[in-house]
Image 1 (cartoon, helix red, strand yellow):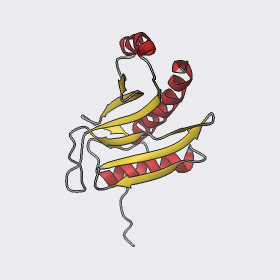
Image 2 (tube, helix red, strand yellow; image 1 turned 90 degrees about the vertical axis):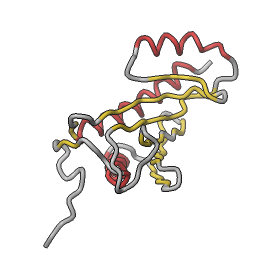
Image 3 (cartoon, rainbow, N blue to C red; image 1 turned 90 degrees about the horizontal axis):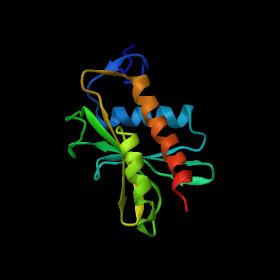
Image 4 (spheres, one colour; image 1 turned 30 degrees about the horizontal axis):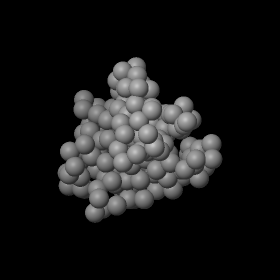
Length: 154
């Protein structure tokens, strides 16, 4: 009996490129094993995966998409971006805090877009990364999104 090989068959295995369905498989694994109320959406037309979850009474919807903008099953990607809204920003009063956080944490990028504070994390699989590392990065993003929401609220 031939079993379909999956990306997370072994979480210690490595990968350099991933298709949308492979990243979706990882996100489903995260929702099932780590997020009690996690929901997943995949949009072929927008070429991104949306993970919806609640933490500390606040709903979050980080989106995972290819850095290049072109992503389908025939075109695996080696760099993805995880992006999510942290909180609303009615005025520019937290701009100084955002600049300091960007300086202190060069692996993330915070910015204001349409009165929302947005968190970006680029994840590169170039050279090979373990599936565990990808899982931990997505979970770390979710934790940072929640912590920054608390820290940046007026």
